[in-house]
Length: 331
Image (cartoon, rainbow, N blue to C red):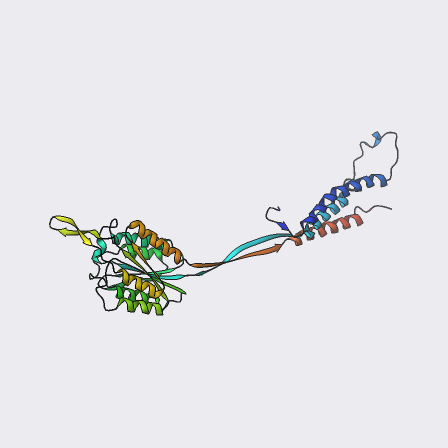
């Protein structure tokens, strides 16, 4: 009954221990004040049935004790508490910008750079809860694979469909950033982020990467740049009439440009040389760009004393009525 109940004045409950004592003294006093007649034998009364009034003679005292018990509980102010949390989230808008040029098929990452990047981006998306995420792909040109959305299942399916060769080959970093900025510029979110992953040098497109970064900075967009590729040379698959052949090709990443882009926008540059390092980079970005959550706890008290007080007064009223009517003592 009291498992989820607390009391504002619990010390009052100790007075309940006095009620058995009160009832004991009442019983003793009843014996002393009751009129008595001495008989040599009570055998003659053995067959006389007790009347209902005789059976209920102690009922008023019992009702009074019960009334006092309920009133004491009421005076102790029983309460139940409901608690909860008001949660306020400030979502982050994120544009994932992914290089799908032919060089992303190099196999210094397993199974190759593009599939490794798709895997870590997919894991990154799965770790978000309330952020809008969009997907931009680029090589010689750039287009939006998925606009900003919180429908992560659709986003992940569109990510899965990405393949190298979908658009003209090349590396248009400036166009890719401009496309991502276009996705984010009208966002009402206080935090806007662009994550650019590439393995090459800007060699295509109409927009200069630094100019794109400056535009991003004007719109309050942070750019994290990720260069993917091992140090030195990487195995690259070529199709020949005799099947797939591998050739070692030099890894060329314009790290100075990627660092400049990040510095302009207040972001950060990362270099991934293998699958494990790529996973760690996206985990770090995930930590840096976590949704801000404000939690306000509340605790509401519900008073329960009314029912106890009502029951106590009801017992008192019942006892008073019986004592003045049916169980009234005769003079």
